[in-house]
Image 1 (cartoon, rainbow, N blue to C red):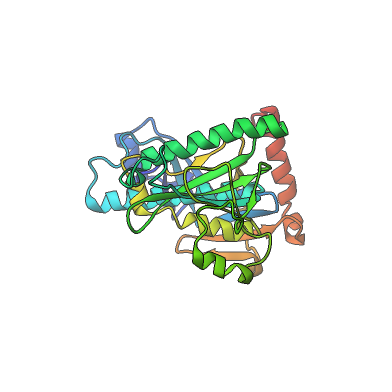
Image 2 (cartoon, rainbow, N blue to C red):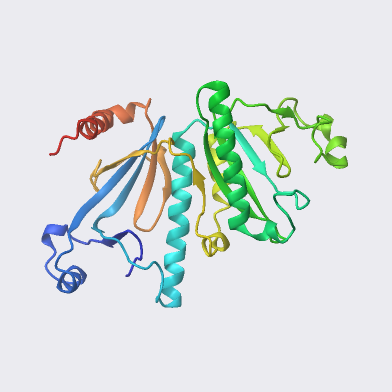
Length: 317
């Protein structure tokens, strides 16, 4: 089985040190410089919980970088590469949302009558529209720093309308610049139907950004980061991955990501079913809250803290 990604994985029927023939030997003959390591599980440490991916059998992981992306692959391999690329992007977006405390969800659209947007045709150009939005975000960051003494954090994902035009969804953390009531007379993009449905909407739950002048904006508080993670991930589609302009999302530099710890449990370790989140052919996924008794019972806390300390002080073992 070929896997075209940064890491190649091979399911082992026996431990790596006992492998004497088969696929590993064939790979070694072609590339004797490659090195494998055996992984039975790994943990992703989030602020409130730990996600454990436990393999039914240990896997051999090969660390190497593929050159040239999916070029020259068969249709089947290219499809496999595409699916894995989509999954990697979705995982990274989910990790950003779950590891950071985003407070606002925002949708940005573009008005073809705006002098900077220029035309309806330009709204169909991802490169042009993303450049406009990121320029606005960068300017807003400077303004935010001058007003409040710090920058806000953000994660931005594009989505394509059915008519082909692009708009963007974003989550902001620590944004304190002006937000107006969505139903205010200042909102020139307010529609008649939205005015009629005003009384049906919760108060102070919907607003717009008066400083955003490229088109319509809508902002609302983030209530559930898990739902928000699932909601934003759905915009990462094959259509977006296949775009000539390869940027799939934009994230501020100061966002947090989960710590990853390899081999936190053995493949034979039994974890209570109450923590089972999902089950696949070759592995199971467990979600364990940090305040649970089982977290301490397996000594996860000590392993997590020890690993983080080693990384902090650059201790090699």
